[in-house]
Length: 144
Image (cartoon, rainbow, N blue to C red; front, side, top):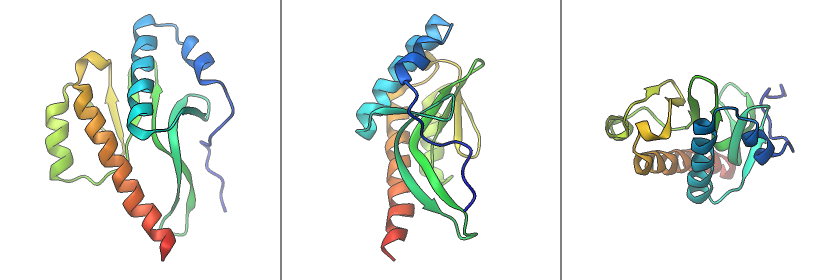
C-alpha cells in the first residue's frame, strides 16, 4: 500500500499556531480550532507540517487506493485558509455555499481569507454535512 504524504503527527498544535506571524490569522486559527473541536468532538492534531485535523477515518477507493485522512482539517496558509471538506457537489451544498460569504471552492477544499468574510454558522453546517458524508461513505463500506 502506498503511504499518504500527509499523515497525523505528534507535533504540538499550540506551538504551530503560536508561530503564525500574522496576529489576525492566528486569532482566526484559534476560532476555527474551537469551531471544529466543538462540531467534531475531536481535539486538534497536526497532519503533516501545516494542517490541523480533527478526528480521522480510513478510506478505500474503487481503484484500491486506501489510507487515513482527517475527518475535517484546515491549514492557515499565508494567502488564505484552506479548509478540507468531504461532501458531494450537490444542490444542498451549493445553497449553503451561496449563503456562506466570500470564499472560493475547489474539489474538496474551501478557501477563505479571514473568518469575518464568512458566516461561521454556515461553516459549521458544512462541517457537519462533511462528517455525515464521510461516515455514510466510508464507515458503511467497512461493514460489507
